[in-house]
Image (cartoon, rainbow, N blue to C red; front, side, top):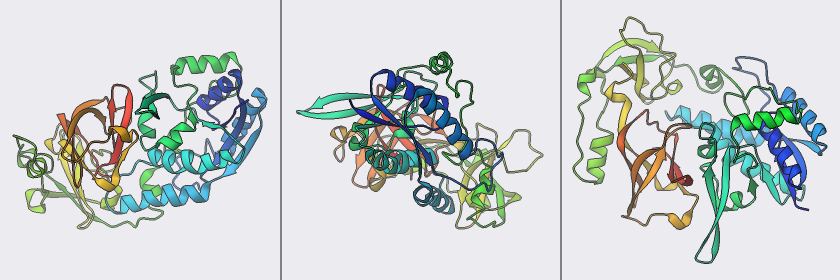
Amino acid sequence: MQRVVIGLSGGVDSSVAAYLLKKQGYDVVALFMVNWHERVGAITSECTWEEDALIAKMVAKKLDIPFHIVDLSKDYKKRVVDYMFKEYQAGRTPNPDVLCNREIKFDIFLEEALKFDADFVATGHYCQKGEIMVNGEKKFKLLAGKDTNKDQSYFLCQLNQQQLAKTEFPIGQLLKPEVREIAREQNLPTAERKDSQGICFVGKVDLPTFLQQQLEVKKGNVIEIPAKFMVKKKQVSFSKDNFNKLCFAYPYKPWNGEVIGEHEGAHFYTIGQRKGLNIGGYKEPLFVIGTDVNRNIIYVGEGKQHPGLFRKGLFIANEDVHWLRNDMQLPINEEKEFDVRIRYRQPLEKATLYQKEEGVYILFEDEQRGVTSGQFAAWYKDDELIGSGVIA
């Protein structure tokens, strides 16, 4: 009998995943991860890890499977939280959920699972796994979940073949309402429990307060850039120069706009942000369209259609490009069309990837709102995630 270690979180998804694995005849072991202890910046004291662990233990007891707890908080702080602070300090906006999956759930947690002689690890992610033979070699495919509203393949965009080979996704072929119904039918303690929100394993927090644990408050100017300064550029054919003119044609200069307020530190803000500016007197809301952490300036524009919020493309440096299917990696100077998303739940957008010596350039068919440095772009063929990278 094959053994599967399920990451049991205290939520309904992993609970149903554990039930399905046992129903399929696996030897199932539940392992709960403690990744965060601190409460600084928390909006609510609800859903602490102690409560989650208690619920998870109740689920394991209900399913009659062994239950264990492992403390990974030191690794989580070093490999996820410290990285977050470093990225924000540099003026970028990281995605902690992608990092958590790459650095913790499918790395450190996988190592812990193997200590229990596991053949596989399993999670409650809404995605699927497939296989294909390429030149006589088995390749594993990361596929979108059946529930398009809950598909979480984007969060797993940094997995590699070795990690995918050892992973199972029991609920990937189910819709969320079906998962809830199974939980109710089996009287699982998580059947009516709300889904968790906020930073992976940290919970729902006030992000500025959370960041202020490590990043100092540094007052600076908020400068409004009128839309008239955002002159659109047209691309004739691809070249590095054309790309830069097309996608990064807006060198926000202080003399292009007017100082309209003060902020607490440019590193606390991200592209497309609306809340936290606390500046009134405008017909339409103000949005962050650019940040300069070196000069500690935030640039804003009025209205959600301000041209400064949109870009035609993005760039990913070679060291930040990851091909989950390395057999589909583009040779230098080759190009190929993919479907791309730059954030969770964003509809896939048609784009062309250009592989150059310095990295990958992505040009979208339609301009994209809120392209943000530090976030991940992921590209797909049909419902398969092929690769990803950190936006420069």
